[in-house]
Amino acid sequence: MLQSGGPPSPHSLCPSFLPSANTSFLQGFWCQPASQLSREQLAALIRRMATQRVLLRAWQLSCLANLAAQQGLQGDFELHPPNLLLFYE
Image (cartoon, rainbow, N blue to C red; front, side, top):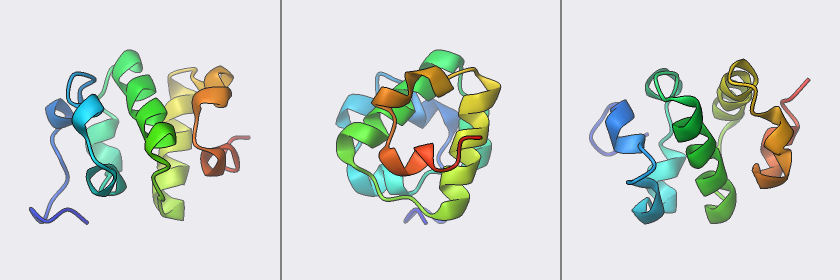
């Protein structure tokens, strides 16, 4: 997924990094590091993915939907990528 061969660290996904994150970096999203993000960081990641119109694979969307549900972020669906909405219950 990522050129480094592994998932990004949770710190590389922090909100201060997100404004400069490009689409290819966001497409390399991995579930495990994202699960360590705070609620605010996860919300920022999801919003950035929507803004960049990042294309994610089904397993990434499923994971992201589960993390959003665990953090109670489904109510912000207007700011979420449209394809992520398909994975909410």
